[in-house]
Length: 169
Image 1: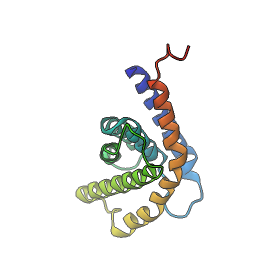
Image 2: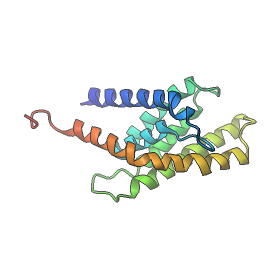
Image 3: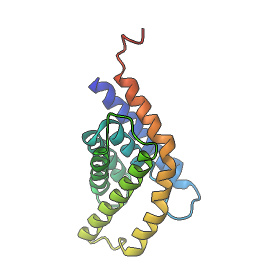
């Protein structure tokens, strides 16, 4: 089962990153664009728990860092923290319909805050109050809008891996 989960995570992270770079970032949206990769990381955290969220966030963030113009590791740390914290909301029982929306908003704000703090500590001149607030007011709502498309898809794929293949026959 572990190899299947790894392959699922790897395939979805690479797909989300490619879609982010080729489609989402080119959309003519006012403000910052939605972060499809972050929503995917939060979806894995909600489906599998904090450790899966942290690992998926770190690996996805590291891949995104390699394709960005900032220091390697900044997104990896921000996404890992967001994945871990939202993974704490993982619950095996039935959850509220609104919980994923709140979790995505919380995760997006956490990642943005961690990225901003890292930028301040590293002396990044692009990190000022205005761009951070602008990103919070534009990117976070876009991420929440992606929630009903990404979170149920990931939850369904993870549940499908949990089903015993012999029981399907």
